[in-house]
Length: 453
Image 1 (tube, rainbow, N blue to C red):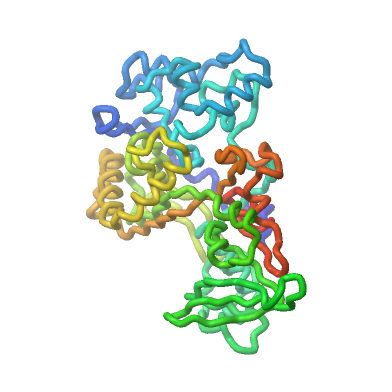
Image 2 (cartoon, rainbow, N blue to C red):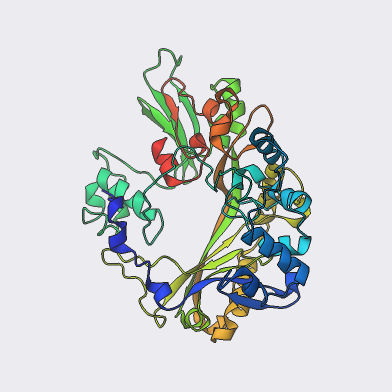
């Protein structure tokens, strides 16, 4: 029931700009020697913007050159040779060794850009044509990992994708919540007691972890699949004509032992990057308004980005309309371990997961309060007074990626790995009455990928 063409009815794209709020950069003293908020990234020009930055003249010159010129740093190579070179070169190495940019400038440019890895792990080929220094190469890959969705309509609920799940459940079990539209689901209260009722056509059983899946008998002639799951400390079994495994691919070999070894190997090589999404409820956003910022990029800081959310009002949910209203601030962190820098991307992600396991909520809270306080102090923000609540979403297995089974490399662009070497294509093959469908099966972490699978 989601009509993506109506998104413009619900989102106010002009709210923040009407108040003069702009994209900004925060330089922290640990990285740049002093705390400084730079409002209006790249405005009115990169040269004028960087004049306010705590950087040397050489670093400023480097950054201006990357942004304002369209130099082809690989003009001596053919397009095919450029592509081959960029595939085997990280963006960081491209800047250092080809564009001849200094480390100081790179520390200012440092951002994951949604790739959940540092500049040393992002291949230059994947961002050619869009990231600074690559626009003159004559290669326009942009910044999209997927060949499956080139032009897509965008739609976002105030709660992200939770409303999508709620719409699906309500369509399957209508009595679980009132209403029937995408507008009324946002504020609908769900009766969890209606999810798992005997006699219902669809039953949703919470707190039930599947641990074993297999055919009842030979898969070539079996008429049923049996699933063993654990709930409240007890193992139970349920049977069905068919089963879809929509979980993390890497756990499937441990759950379904009868799968072919080659498929188990491909499944176990599923790659997921860790990341942290944090929501901070503040009592008002007057500090943002006074400073003129709506989003802040924070190179070198604990959290990479601080953003005010899209101004979405739908159904009974109304977004903040004035800076005096409470609002939920979004903060994003890629939890990479400095000691792992320079290792392969999968190794960096594994090290990050280990570090994340040892990170307490108190550590997140302390860094949230410290970083927001330092960024917004000039606008009168007081963390002790203004922060009302914090939710930290720790995703040790966050964004889905695929792997080239021959090289072992991350498949940054899924259209460029031959099918016989694409781990996700081998992993998702149906097996008898068991199907495998999830974002891992499409090697892309977006909701539309999971839907398509």
